[in-house]
Amino acid sequence: MPERKNKFLNTQVQDLEIAGVYKDLDANLLNLIRTNKINPKPLMICSGSTSSGCAAKDHWTLDLRYRFKKVEFYPAQNEVLIEAGVDMKTLIEELKDHKRSFPIGISGSTGIGYILTGGISPLSRKYGLAIDQIKELGGYWANGEKFKLKKPLHSSSKDHLVQWKALCGAAPFLAIITHIKLKTHQLKPLGVWETTLEPEQLAETISISEQWPIQASLYWMWGETIKAFGVYEFKENYSEKGFTEIINEVPKSDDFKTSQIEDLTQLNRFNLPIPSDSFNQNKYSEVVGILGPPLRNKSYELVKTIEKLMQNKPNPSCYISAQQLGGATMTEVKNLSSFVHRNSMWKPWITGTWEAGNNEQRKKSLDWIENGWIELEKYFPGVHLAQIHPHLHWHQKEIKAAFKAWLPELQQLKSKFDPEGILLPL
Image 1 (cartoon, rainbow, N blue to C red):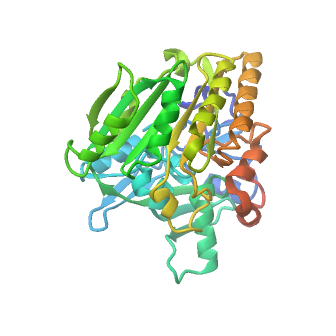
Image 2: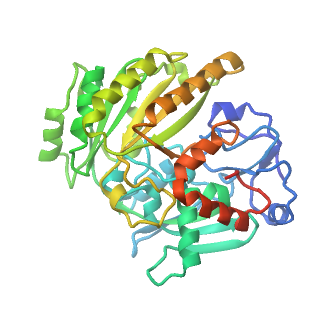
Image 3: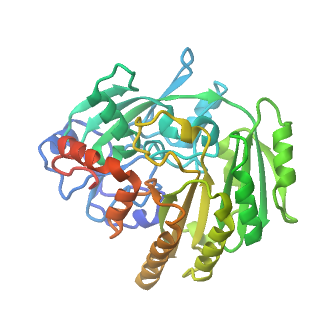
């Protein structure tokens, strides 16, 4: 039976008056889905509970964190099967026992939504996106039909290829995924550096990083100050010429420091340049992630654009960040995922925040996000749907920017597998 309350990590979602929570995808819920008796629609899906899209006012949420907790490692194939309620920190900790790893993002709190919407990691330049590691998907289409798909071969049917491509990057619109099987990688030590930068130093660092080897990546965050962080995967131990060369050439300030970590869960130790109360229960936020190609000689121009945006941010907790792609994310076999922006080297995201219940602040922050998006889309024309916003007026714009020419075919699949609109609108 569904329950009325649940604990979500996203503070905005936690405060919503939702219809209730389903804690299992059982015969009763499947019958409601198949007979189109979910009301109101869509049914919201929660795996990590960090997104503003995991619940909605007066809607039902299926929370996969209760029932779908299995993690099973297959040593002969170096693959791991995880159910949909497993967060990325748990995945990494389980794999560590086998001296294996997986390219999670900068937060261990996210669920499989991180993987299914693309999954950009500090290790993506070497290993590819999280969706590129998927070997098998299983669950239920939004019409209630059960399925299990393995990664297509050259001999696979067109239907198999199209369905796989759709689920790898657009699954939240089409299906409830209950398990995925993933390729894993050898666990290797990481070198990390961080420093505070001035705007021109950031532009220089961005320009330098576009020439880095694929085992290195840049992450920067512009809040009250600008902080840059670099991650480098060593081959065996914490001593490598490539890492030394990078830390010698990057601009730095007096607070520059390096550290050694065992896995990506330890990236949470970063000192973020935003107020410490930004993640408390009195703050709400929304995020738009955008994608674009290498900047080459435009990094200084970009930084000036961002500097103007930051001068007009509506409150101190608003910020703009970016992660680096490239390398393996650009060379993955085409047409096997809905992540169509394979030419991208940068994923910036714009975060607007406001005090709970303050509608004026909310409007100013959402306007600031949207204006920032407009200002930056000449550099970053794509969208990464790590956060989906059906509750905001820009939803159609983000959908079109995320899927481009692939969208009409996705919409055809939507009409086939979700004719009643049980899941998020596409």
